[in-house]
View (cartoon, rainbow, N blue to C red):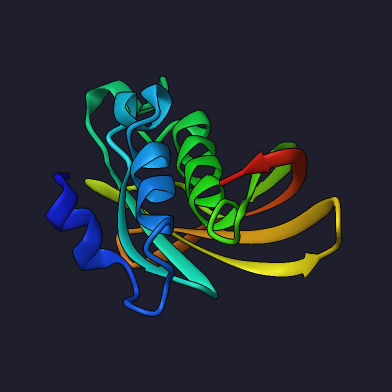
Length: 147
C-alpha cells in the first residue's frame, strides 16, 4: 500500500500524527513478509487482510495456524498503537474454531480494556466469510515511548 491508500483506509477523525504510526506498523518487516494490509482503521475497530497461497498451508492443505495467528497479531499491532503510546504484545492466545479454507484471511479487532500500563484486545479472524478463530492479546505500554 502506498501513502494515499493507507490514508484512504483511516478514519478522518484520527489525529494526523497517527498516519505515521500506521505507516510504521504497515511497513514493519513481519507485516510486509506476510503481506498484511489494513482495510479499515477507526479509533474503536481495525480490520486487516492477508492473502493466502501455498506458503500459508499446513501439511493437509488447510491454512496453517501460524498464518492465522500472524494476521491476528499484526491486526492487534495496528489497533494497540492508535492511541499515542507504543505497545507490544505481553501475551497472546488464540482459539481455532474451524479450518481456514480460501484465498484470504480478514481480521477485526476491538479493545476490551485499558489501564495505565496494559490493554486487552479481542481479534476475530475470518476466512471465506466464516469466523475461524478468536485471539486475545494483552498489550504492554512502553513508558516514555510515544507512538
